[in-house]
Length: 151
Image 1 (cartoon, rainbow, N blue to C red):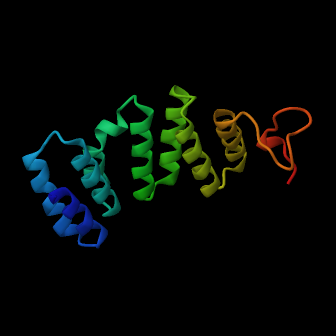
Image 2: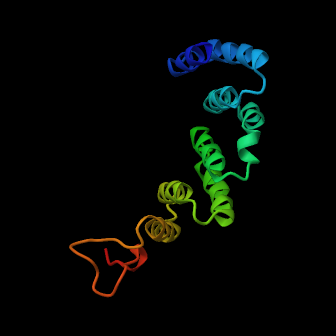
Image 3: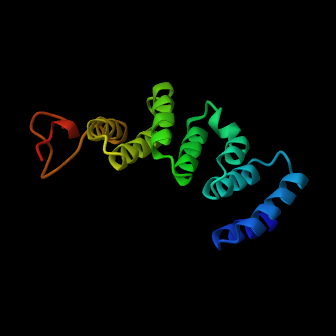
C-alpha cells in the first residue's frame, strides 16, 4: 500500500513527499526491484539522472531484453531519446528477435528524424510480427518491405 501511495504522490506532482516514501520503502525492503524501478523513474523525471542510474542499474546491466527495454523507456522519460535509441540498438544487436525493442526503436528513430533507420526498423517489426504487410490485398511479388514502398 505504501508503494502505491508513493507512486500516486509522484503522479500528483508531490515528488519530494513521494521520494521520502520511496526512501523509507527501500530502507524496509532493499531487495525489492519494483520499488527501485518506481523510485528510479521518479528520479529520472525529477531531473536527477545520477540517482536514477544508480537505482536502475540492474535493468541497464541486464541481458534480459525485456528489462533492457524497460530501462530504455526510463531514458525516454528522463528526456534522452537519442541515448535510449543507442541503448536499444545494442539491445537488438544482442537480441535481434525482440520485437518490442524494435517497435520502440522505430518510434525513437521517427522522433529523432532518422528516417532511413526508421524504415529499416519498420521492416524488422513486420518481419517479426507477420512477415508481410497487406495493403489492398497481398502484394503480387510476395512480402513487401516498408522501405520499398513508394510514398
